[in-house]
Length: 100
Picture 1: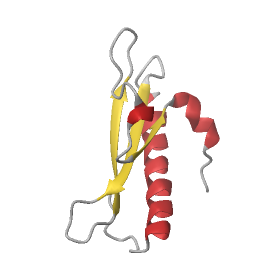
Picture 2 (picture 1 turned 30 degrees about the vertical axis):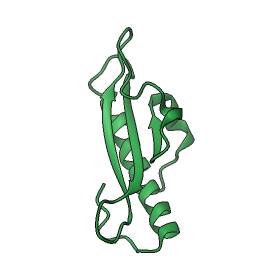
Picture 3 (picture 1 turned 180 degrees about the vertical axis):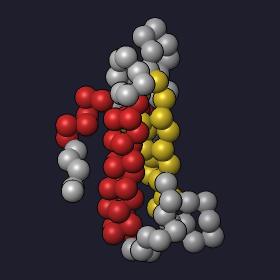
């Protein structure tokens, strides 16, 4: 997720990163419904410190399709401790509203 324009303050940076990432993920999931018969696309947003000389919070996003009888992208999301991960799917979209 692009973050070069964000402030250095960790709290403000995190809030903006999450808003931007969730909006992008929701848009991707919504657009996948136009081409897929079933809502199987999942978005994974991870937030962690960058590997730079002066680490800052940064976010990454992965989209994947969940298929029955296949291993999920992240099998045990609760066991991850080095970064924050948010998993979103079609059923989660109603929790987020778009500001117009």
